[in-house]
Amino acid sequence: MKKLLVIFIPLLGIAQFSPPAGQHGSDAIHRDSSIIKAWATSAVIERGLVDIRNPLFEFNDDNHASFGSINNILGSASGSTIDAISLGDGGSIVVSFDKVIRNLPGADFCIFSNAFSDTFLELAFVEVSSDGERYVRFPSTSLTQTETQIDGFGSLDATKIHNLAGKFRVGFGQPFDLEDLKDSTNIDLNSIKFVRLVDVVGSIDPLWARHDANGNIINDPFPTPFWSGGFDLEAIGVIHEGEVNPFLNLSEDEAATISIYPNPASDKINISANGFGVVRLINSSGKSVMSESFHDHIQLDIHHLPSGFYFIQLQQKEQLTVKKIAIVR
Image (cartoon, rainbow, N blue to C red):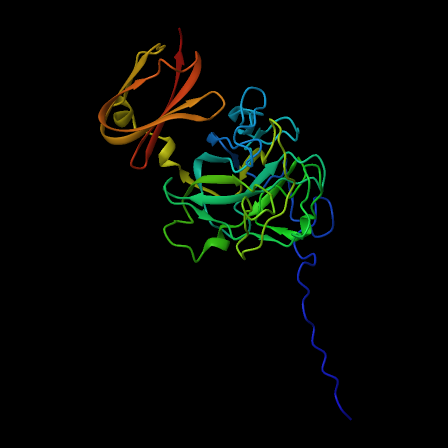
């Protein structure tokens, strides 16, 4: 009697990853979950265009996304679709925490977006860094079809998306496990100090397309030529935290060597600190408007900047101090 040999061949593009929040087998984490131990405490954003195909497109007197502010994404997730910040096409945001993130069994942090449904999903790449300079990207997978462009109000199937932020509706965090990066170099997985999110443009046009770790084009709603276009970050929760983040904490002696004056300022700001470093001036929306290297002292010309509150970020080796200043006219 002959035996029948049956071979199962997996079909490309079939659903295989976590389904939406609330469905059987979903790994979505509710914003009130007790496994979340801490939340983001600071961030810097570089806004992307409202339509990457047309850099001269003007919307609200600008061509960049502008919805939300940095304050919206600091602290715990609120579960509100308006309590977020939009990256725009190809925009990015770097988020940091009071304590480092550690690689322990299971998910180590989770990312919340503001999707109002289980299918209207705007995606972002997720990267981490232990030194603020070298970032490692989570290996992502998109099995969404690439024959037809998903339009600006189209739908995605969460089960075809993996390791791309934005696959769950508002109020539910998407888990990320640092163990996925265990073979990466130039990173300490037990001392992650920064998480960076980079908007997936979503176009299937090769000129603008972005790709997953396997080289597949990532198809998501495009274009979204609105002030709230691109990926929308609502919060980042830390599940496994370690020691105090040295980038965000200075000893009293180190802090005493830093001088920033005058404050308020109108035309120039003087910054003094021992040694080499980088200084960044960040506006109230979290966008970096100036970045300069220095040795011991630097004077920033701010006469062209509008009045308002700003933040000075001063980075030296593995130390970062942040001070709030006012520009007045």
